[in-house]
Length: 117
Ligand SMILES: [Zn+2]
Figure 1 (cartoon, rainbow, N blue to C red):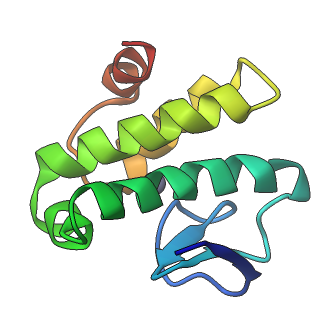
Figure 2 (spheres, protein in one colour):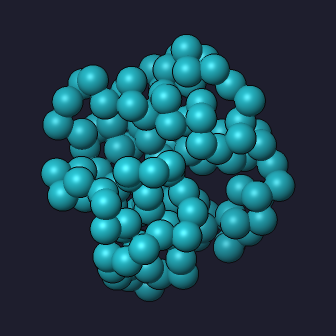
Figure 3 (cartoon, rainbow, N blue to C red):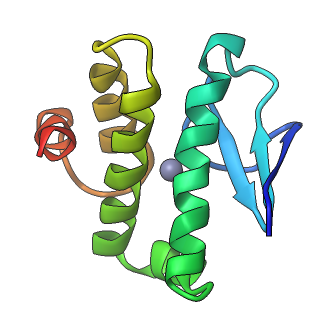
C-alpha cells in the first residue's frame, strides 16, 4: 500500500507550528508547517508507516500505551528526518520536540543524546 500526502488541519502530533499526523495510508501535514520542511516531515511519517507494517499494525497501540516503544519509534523517525534536514542544527529542534511533545519524561539534553546514539 502506498502513501498519499494531504495537507489539512492536523489532529495530533508534533506541537504547534509543525504538526503531522499519520492515518492509514495517509500522511497529513498541517497547513502551518513551513514548506521548506515538508520533505522532512514526509520522511519522518514514512518511517512511522514502516513501523506500522513492521509491527503488523500494532504500532498505534504500542505507541499509545508503551512509553518505551513510543520513544524508540520517535527517535527512529527523528533520526531519519535529521538525515533529510538541510541543517545540522535540526537536532536541536528535534530534541526539543522529543522532550516536550510525546510525554516521554525526558529532558531536551537526554533527547539529544538519544538522537546522537
Ligand atoms: Zn513521529
